[in-house]
Image 1: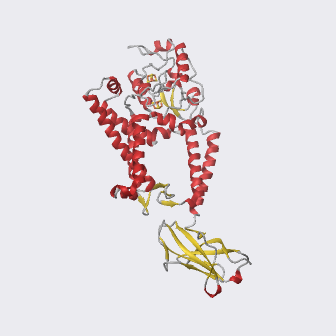
Image 2: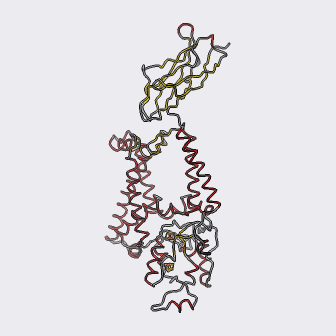
Image 3: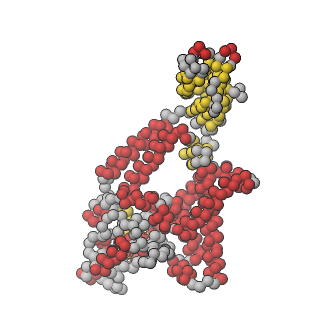
Length: 486
Ligand code: SF4
Ligand code: SF4
């Protein structure tokens, strides 16, 4: 399964040889031999302005990624997805499972954002910001160039018999890869459990943190496997985003594209060849040097058209621009463009589909902002204490025992009180005199609700309990009070 997006190959002049290549591209995965064995991609190191810009952007993102768990806003992490405790932090704001609706709308907004972004800009995310691409191309691959040399040296090293020098290089590379994977695995773990908990796991007796240490080892092995072994397969086989694109991309989407109108009919550039002569022979600007293929980290030929494997990394743009400069032709034979732009010269357009997605996205963002701004500062949940019905209290009253969970979504500590809406009973907090809920925390207590039996309407009487924080009413909780059968 080669993974072309469902669109025809380049139009324009095509030679018979080109026709054969086109069929071949459709029927074979670029990174597999015909007998199914993997064809290892030894990508040549790119050089050029796009690579430079991507390098700067990557350093900024990598810095942010590693610093993220340690950045605090109001004492809370910048980002945290604590699935274990079901506690999430976004920009220093803590979200709880009870904020599920906000989370669901945030997810919908995220996916709608991806849809409109991909429809307009293709896989800009993959090439410029995806952690997998950034770490692979800007860290692991650069270290590989440093240890094993550029693509041709790597190829020679892989083909060479095992010697002490080869063993040393391979050992060094894999030790460095493993160490980095450990660092990345720990960073991911700190996004899940928080940097304080991670520090605790590292400093404390390992026997007390077998699950945490297990996660550390697992994450390290997964990242090591991805960067040392799977590489481009993570993008083509595992990541679902690459697969979405066939549904999201259209002829107006901006992608890294080969200008087949200008490039075909491809033919090698003969020394001292005059442009007019080349044109007279119906030859295009593509000199068929395969430099765009040599630098491609997913091993594809961009001249075959838009393909699922293309992560829009721009390496082929740089490679081709360098070739065009050498042969005295303008750059941009491979460039960011839409297929409509290449075929018909149209500028990038804001299409009806993009407008529709934009309206949906704006609506979702508005809904998300509304939900966040109107989110209650405190949320109380009353649950009947397990295994209890009702008890006789003093002065002939009936009591029910509840477990109360209070979530304080503000950043300050709150003193929480409970009062019945009606005057016919009282709520008694068991244990401490003041029930203090720390900022951004969940606290639990037990309360006894006592009612005069004459106010019971049936064996289950509806009850409204006011929740007060620092003396101010912030919520009314509806629950049921169980009494003797009437
Ligand atoms: S075809 Fe070009 S942009 Fe796409 S992955 Fe290969 S080198 Fe990167
Ligand atoms: S690098 Fe440019 S000129 Fe060379 S084969 Fe690729 S598209 Fe053609």
